[in-house]
Image (cartoon, rainbow over all chains, first blue to last red; front, side):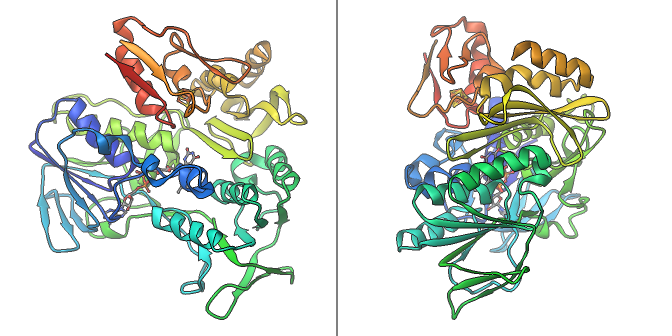
Length: 400
Length: 63
Ligand SMILES: Cc1cc2nc3c(=O)[nH]c(=O)nc-3n(C[C@H](O)[C@H](O)[C@H](O)COP(=O)(O)OP(=O)(O)OC[C@H]3O[C@@H](n4cnc5c(N)ncnc54)[C@H](O)[C@@H]3O)c2cc1C
Ligand code: SF4
């Protein structure tokens, strides 16, 4: 292996590049990213950066400042991959002929159809997105409508409330956060937002956004009309696989890789874009978490360096993520969902400081904490090993 | 080797504790405690992993 192209120089891609160097790879590493900015961390975009407490410099990803001897192509988009020949074509016509490719192009924010070109309608995925939203808030926006009560929308809502801005949150599901946390815990989080003054409209959709050039109001499916200076759309993401058409890779809501993160010989994928078969859960997962992007990036790099006769490691990192909203810190190890059994094992939902176990098929699938970081870490093994539900409950309660 | 945590950055999410419980502990008061400021050299790889995985880039190693 003499040259590697890393496509997507964000969290997963840069940690892959760094891991290649840590593993002793001395060849050429070309890192390509369509974004022209020095690669930055995304979680603060909806939190500290949007609030104005962190400046741009604080966002720069650590590997950027290290001497990794990378051959940068920032502001350049990959337009094609030929997996068989291991060549990557860039938008200016340059062709990178390499021996290994790390595909880490992540995801892009889903937009509301029909809102292109209406000023004041935002998504939050890139630094430019966050700067634009921040500029509208600085310019005196007083009424924000957040469409979609997912984590990013909820964080934007919390940050805006912190800035003293009126927030209406619109969610199509009857209980906000139901899809990710189930109805029981979802409603606790919904109450946290209500208590902070968010006008939560659950069970309704957006019928349209009106305004002459600039957003003025949002029409809801129940006939209500909400005045707005700014709309933030947080309705999920789509994997950035458009450039992989005809590449020879399998695309199915992300790039399909094997249990060692290999997409094709000499081609690995990592981060938000990669779908890998999880032995723990017995199904293919695509996880959009910060910690997973690092773990996958590192593992994918090591995979690339395994010779064809070697035996690569199986990847099955336990998902873990956090979300900060107001003074509440939500953490989840493993997974949770609407069809899981839920049991609070430490603390109580009344004090909004608790740990809940999520179970399915008689096993512990996830450990969720609200302002309980210590317990989540101590109990994550229950999800990691998917211990029997009753045993998990007993072990967790013994701790609380 | 000296482990240094920037407590202005640390948000006590206990990621480091999950990786090296011998060195990092978040207690019930929600503060992070560094149990050993000069841990044994054999812990270096794990501590380096904690440095990489800290969401706030709050941990550094001196020496
Ligand atoms: C606002 C926000 C807040 C978040 N908060 C949290 C949180 O609190 N906790 C948590 O666990 N996770 C959080 N996340 C999720 C976390 O940031 C992602 O999981 C992580 O960024 C995924 O990293 P990645 O490298 O796989 O993909 P991305 O970060 O999406 O990076 C992909 C890169 O590929 C580039 N790219 C795309 N297409 C091309 C192309 N054709 N050619 C060249 N380059 C291309 C893009 O420009 C981008 O830089 C948050 C995300 C956002 C947006
Ligand atoms: S991982 Fe970082 S932020 Fe989290 S507790 Fe440790 S030092 Fe603090």
